[in-house]
Amino acid sequence: MQMVLFLAASVLVICVITVFERVRHPGPTDWWRNLQAWALQMGIGMVVMRVWPDWHGGSLIDVRTMPFWLALPIFILVRDFLEFFYHYAQHRIPALWAMHSLHHSDPEMTALTTNRHFWGDQLIKGLTIWSATSMITTSTFPLMATYAWMSLYNYFIHANLKVDFGRWSWVLNCPAYHRRHHSRLPEHYDTNFAALFPIWDVLFRTYRRPDGWPPCGLDEGAPQSLGDLFAWPLRWSPAREPDTAPTAQRPSEA
Image (cartoon, rainbow, N blue to C red):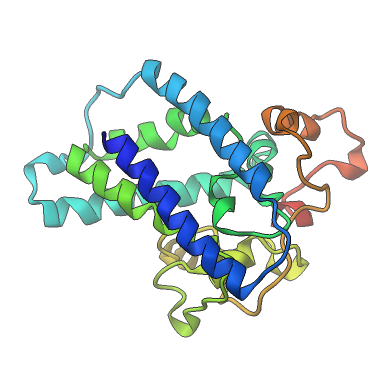
């Protein structure tokens, strides 16, 4: 029931934001490919998570003995930092970029871009940051549920809405802040990796204040079929010519 409610809330948030997007910035989007990527990711994810082993070892911080008002910020900060760390790694490690580049391939970022991820990404995150979170801090159902509902904010930060927090952009992510991360412009490469809290970008010197509304997408183009979505990383195979191989400084990794 919780999963159904969350899915329904996700659809509602997407619909509301999309209406505002269409009013403010009408134009073509890759909405159908985004929906296909979401369906593929959810379908495979539901199957995998049923058999995926949970971490049963100890944790450095046991929040189960803490009041909820204290446990929640600890859990969120740990999770958000690991999301930042993994996202940074996706732009540095070729195998991870091969998968993550699907997210950056959307030629016009919208709320639906939020779910434009390669299906295998969930498997890698399950082995890495999700397990790491359990090793650092325990979790409870209320903590996981609260974090899941907070994650709906991701639809807003991907929205094609010119919202900029200006000099307060280091406090909380917003569309202009994240748009800079998806930018095709060279001066915007390798910046603004944060999921929720840009303080991680500030600490690791990848923070840049939003400046305008740059174009998005990859030089290499976008997927043209469901098959492309399923086998997306193969296009980044090492067999490619050296002068077209992706590097951390190429526009495709902005």
